Every structure is written in C-alpha cells, then in structure tokens.
Image (cartoon, rainbow, N blue to C red):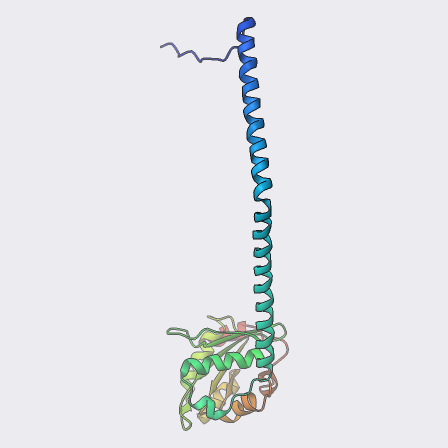
Length: 228
C-alpha cells in the first residue's frame, strides 16, 4: 500500500508569487506594528490606574504585616505577665484548662500548642524547647477534692515517647494525686503538678522547668519506649 505523500510548502516562484508573498509579509508586519502601538497607548492610558492599584495593594499588605507583628508583640507581653489563680482554674471547663496550660508554657519560653481532643492518646498540650526537647502535658481538670490515680501515669508513660516522641511527660491537675501515683511517676520519670505546684507555676510565676527541675538536655527517647 502506497504511503500518502506529504504536502510541502514550496518557495514562491516567479515575479508574481514573490510579489504576493512580499505583500502578505508587509501586511503581517503592519498588523503586528499596529497591535504593538495600540497596546502601548492602552498601557500609557491605564498606567496611572495600575500604579494606584499597586500602591494600594502594597500599602494594605504592609498594614496587615504591621498589625500582625503588633498583635504578636502585645500577646507576648500579656503572656509574659500571665498569672492564673486556682480559683480561676476551678471554674474552667476541660478545654479552657488545656488552653491555659498551653499559655503558661508559652509564657515560660516553650513553643506550645493545644492538641487535646477525643482519642488524643494522653496528650492535651505539646511543647517544644531547643534545650529541653519535646514536652507532653496531660491535663486532668477535676474538683478541688479530686485525685488522679496511677492509671493516668501508666497511660501517659505508655504513649508519651512511642506515640508523641516526647522527651518529658507531665500530668497536671487542679486537684491532687494519690500517693501511689506520685511514687510511680517519680520512679518512671512522669512528672506531676498538683494543686500546690500549680499555684506556684501559674499564680506565683515560677517557670515549669524550674518548678520541676527539668533537665537541660532531653533524656533519650528510647527510655520511654523500653519502659512502655
């Protein structure tokens, strides 16, 4: 079966064809020149408007940036003076308690965020510090007479390192801990903050790292995994 022949453009032949090709080329060049001139005139006419829009856009972006920087500075100053009394803690709900602990960590120099939700695997607040590593805080908001038992300590120990990659695990309550919970936590490096320590941390302003004498260098995370 014969292959179809491909059509090829042939150069103009003869004087008439060459003249026609030259005329077409001149017409194309004239059209391009006219488009360029029209575009230039249109740009010159709308240039002041475009410049105005650019100035307004840059001014708005600068205003937003200055506003955000000022808001962060004000928040940092407020957090630096943050003091929360036990009476204020007692009337909070669980989520407000978690956010309050996050703000206290930020006040103490940690980069902290609230992560508590259903299925949080014993982590309500997670903080980061360049010298001390990662801290996981389990918040237990309760009544004044409420006590946190050893089961909470077991759960925090089992998830702090393997699940959250924590170097430090802390359980905080506005109530108290049972004697067994305190003893177990001290043996297995799960720090605890009861009502008395919470007052010293939140109301008196003692940084958490000083209150609990947290190590400057993070402990090996494998210790959590081996214990778990």
